[in-house]
Image 1 (cartoon, helix red, strand yellow):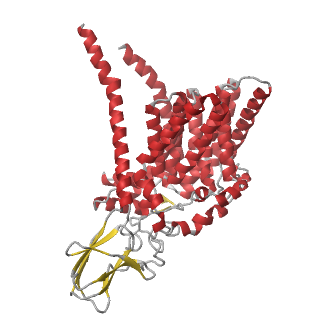
Image 2 (cartoon, helix red, strand yellow):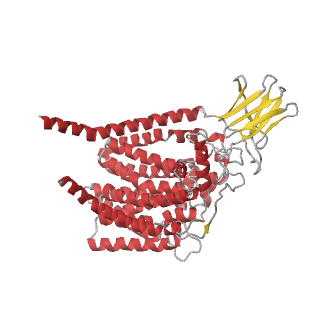
Image 3 (tube, helix red, strand yellow):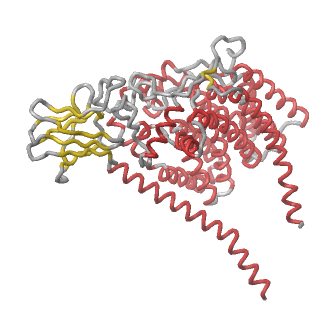
Amino acid sequence: MNNVLRLVKKLVPELVVGGILLVFILAVIQPMRANQGMWRIFDDVHVIRTIEMKNELLAGQFPVRFIQNFGNGGGYPLFNYYSPLTYYVSAVLVFVGTNPLNSVKLLFQVAYVIFAGGMYVYLSRGLKLSRFQALVLSIVSIYSAYFNYDAYIRGSLAELLAFSVLPLFLFGIEKIWKKTKIAWIVFSALVLSAIFLFHAITGIIISITVGVLVATRIFLRKERSVQSLLPFLFMFGLTGLVCAFYLVPAFLEKEYVQYGTAEFVKSGYISAQISLKEILGLTSFGSEVIPTTLGFGLSMLLLGFVLRSMGMYVIKVRKGRQVSSEVVLQVSYSVAALKVLFLISPASSLLWEHLSILQALQFPYRFLSALTVLSLAGIGLWMKSVSGFLKKIVLLGAIAFAAVQTSWIAQPVGYYFSDTFTADDVCSTTTWQQEYLPKDTQECLDKGTEPFVKASETLEIISFSIGHDVVTFETNGGTGTVQVSKYFFPTWKAYSQNGEQLVLYPSNELGLLTLDISAETSRVTIEYTKTPIQILSEMVSLLAVLAVVLYAGYEVIRASIIPMYISLKLNKM
């Protein structure tokens, strides 16, 4: 009975916090729930991607890499390169009966719940803020400018979901730093894996940020250098193994597609640079064009935190005093925030020009996701060391600033209502510049092109069938060349009626599947298969996930069954 009362005493305050957060979340997402339509956003592709993900899963493809209906029917390896987790989740929602549009809208709203809840856990359990401080800053998080800009203006659902998970990852990082336990290493690796699988670019951004955060602490506390570094290296390694099925092909097979030559990949960072004035929110009020900003409130509080923490560190060092772990913690967040601020600003242009890893991130302002979380953490650390009255005033002021910004950022420019969703771009790929088209495809099939199998004049096609991921045709036994209405990609394999593998190659500006037919070949089957790299990477991920599951099972047994067994034995004695 006493145990139950203690549990209730612990749960009630947390339930109250959850209820308060839910009230504020519902207020912010109210425009998303205002009607049955979809608010107008830049990235209006999520519903059709969800539908096609569901179709590929029903066709038996897993993991899904190739969307056969995209590319105007020629096929498109979208999820071999673009993080797929968002659309696995939305497709599952459709499987259980949710309308495709509603599944997308629901995920936008769930992102707010994850972000607020994760921020509360991170601040209260990771950085040891009081319940009140963590609650208030969690409310500020869902009112933050860039989070709402992602949701209501850009509409980048994958990036928003990855953004929402960042606090949980930083919570894991703090736990590893304080308690080097395998459980926290595995937890952090799984959370980082989710971030990469939601949006790989955000995964790279937060990895760079955490690298600076950890490196700064190790540098300031040299006696823990080796001891502190190994758990983080293990965590990143485990993340790579879990995500290998996606990350390895996305990297090693990029030469098959046009991604590296796409204009926005090579130079998108130039047009996407934003001024320091805009980053800090000094153009927010009264602006006709909604800026990409951290927001004035968070910016000013962040700068105050950085100046204070760095000043304290310099004073202690100059006076020869010992630098406490709390000051080291604050300085590490300050350095990480300054690094991120630098990479967003035009001052880092030279780095973006010469570092391909930065160019792969495409737009510098994407670092605002990491900067938002770092800002809230920094403000929380600052609040821990000021007087109670001033603390409340500053926190309430932060909410007021954030609410003013969100009042016009979180307002849709309009809605649209439709029961039919299609990929409307010229090549039906749902991507910016068709950057995942095979490198030999210089032009797309025309929209509405019926699937075809064409033969040269010396050869006659008697019959053909084009299924979801297989093409079969029969010839009159002559010789010649056959062209199929699918873009050439190494995943396609052709076989004769005798099981002999035939050579496929791309032809003309469309880069369509083409093969030469001899007189001995009368029936051909062309199948979608997996490349050796894809097969190997999937095996690596499967083994990594299996190891994690076995470890989790061991921990459950160790934590519950073994103590129960010992207790029973003691009672019998």
